[in-house]
Length: 313
Image (tube, rainbow, N blue to C red; front, side):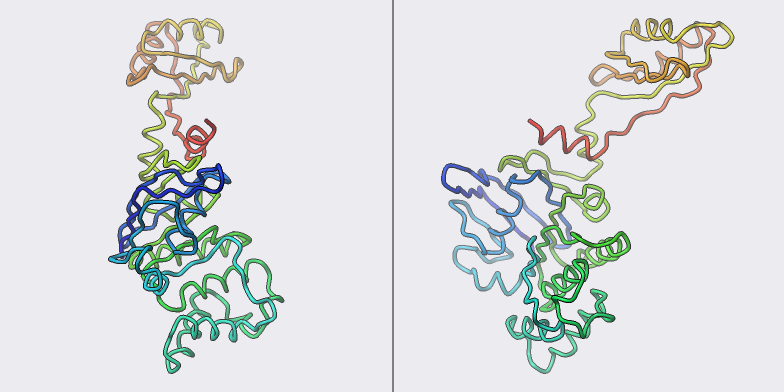
């Protein structure tokens, strides 16, 4: 079931939390939704789930509009909010039974669905406890179970691995990827490595506007623009100093900037001019001066760098 967002805007007083954004998420796609605090991520997800009514714009979940078919959309969405509100005094099994009844699951199927959620979400060892007795990680698992119990076609997850230990995070990632093969998933997270490992596509929002949309590889490529390389040169035969190498590198036409990382080891960081490469020029310079080029490796732009570049403005 596809999600289509068109010209979505939400205003709180004088603040435009979401500012005329449009995007589409296809069935079988896991979309990572990134942005700094206050960027508009949660507001957008609440609008999709019909929890919050937008100031203007349209959201369609499959064939259903949030303006005309809010109840139909709710039946088809599983939602794990960031706050993960749970009834602390209820035992896990009672809570899942309660949620199953709310979601309209047939009584004859409820026990099987609860058993399935306990297994899928790793709750077997804790299932007889009250929710208030659980660690934060296990409460998060209960939240996932309630979002999945009615087998929704769309899953909206706001910080789903918050509070989990590293092993649990890996398990939940694998679960989300498995779910994403058949469902439409929007995943919000502050953990960039998690988004990169879990999601097919990444969308970055800042100050209510979409500032980037694509795969992690595409976003890194777009952000690079200028080639960045690490260079190390052995000048033992000629006795050239790091300063002399630095001066020679700066004379190469294809190079825009040179930084000395280590004078003793003669290591440098070299940035090429826009849409140019300087690898061959550096190699030729070393040959001409009798130097040995011991390292020439590109520096890959990290997703963290892309995020900072797009959201610090």
